[in-house]
Image (cartoon, rainbow, N blue to C red):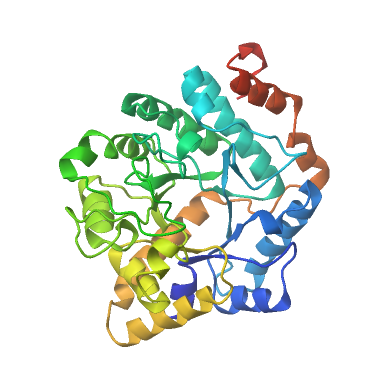
Length: 368
């Protein structure tokens, strides 16, 4: 039972190397993956060494399943890797230029850089439609305020990541573009009904699903006209009914960080963890609080023992996670660093990043 629970979790770590306690927890609980935050990043060589250290833990784990090593690299202000890694512009520049070839190259070249140092999952792209200009939480993280523009570029972004060998994740379902409140701080309450979401917010996610995006991230937004009880990330209606049944999505579903105040101000940590799985999410994300993964792990085991949901229910999701890893992570270890550094901050990457920033692309310099 222990192996089932841990594989559903992606957790943060404290520093630039793993502590002994972190190694023990990851191995003993069969944790599914690690997310790298700014505090975990110093230099390309250090990131490469850290990813090597994390991935090596699989050899001590029960089924030797590779670990997800995730990061938030969107470009712009949400970018955990700093120079000499390429400094990529925000997605708004993708929409401003509106060229699918450049969009594909953006995610492909970014993905190559991530893959080289051992990062195999990028929580990107944002597919939020920026319908509220006062929404600073999303702002230039969005491709555009126009549905058709976000829809158009969703596929190119996903194809680029896939070609680079990196798992990608469409976020923040069903769309965070109309909010005022930042879900890091409190729970946004949205007035939209299903008709509105069908017309605007769902559109680029449907494109992402058809483009075989690896993952979709559920948001901490509440739509009382649709589900009066639960925010999206904890809602069986949004996760099981909409994503799985109505949209027929067969990939992985991951929550946004479950320690964000949108949830923790309204529910206890045990309830959050159990309800996130009951809602139908495959992966539970914990970025910052080192105590939360253990609390969640124990709460899920307790809920299973009490019959809150069945082992078979968890097993189905477990097989979806491990199956995706086996299919895509055929060579999970980072390449040798001497080879990896050839992909970091390349002239082609810098040229593309600068061209997107300025709105002028030399297409003969694009790779992929």
